[in-house]
Amino acid sequence: MKVYNVIIALASIFVLSSCEGNGKNIEFFAPKDDASKNTTDINTVNGSIMVLQRIALPKNAIITVTLSDASLFGVPSVILSQKSYNTKGHQSPFPFEINYKKSEVRPDAKVIVSATISVEGKLCYVTESLYEVVNNGVDNNVDMVLTAVDSDG
Image (cartoon, rainbow, N blue to C red; front, side, top):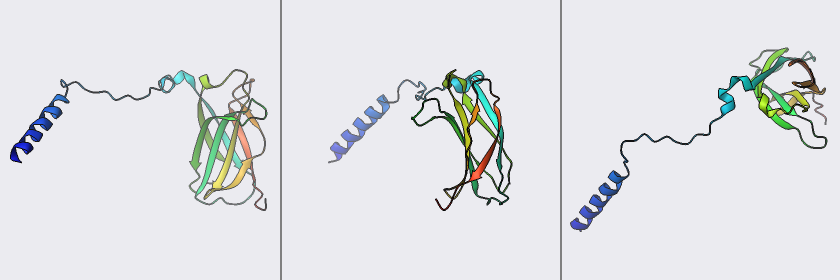
């Protein structure tokens, strides 16, 4: 039995030492995002979000801003970028800034920005108007107004 253990140990050492390689550094594959290195491809939409109702939002309210391509009728819009903010007890108006890759936006695309406010996963406020940005000569600075969601729904 001792001879068998010695043979197993030597075989293990041989196998493990042959796996060492020649001291070369191994680089693990990581997808490279060329756009993240090329800052000329990144653009920004910014502005403010207002809630007209005179109700204080709780400290744990979450604002989600979404930039999407709504070009195709009858098809769900394609989300280009989305960002969430914790209000931390601050009240309206809320400044926002959302980045997107210019290379992902077609020249003829109808790009819209929208926002929601939710508390503990429950939707409380939404944008009812379309706020078109990016293309068609519109400004990338937009002031959005949110309205309360009908809780009786």
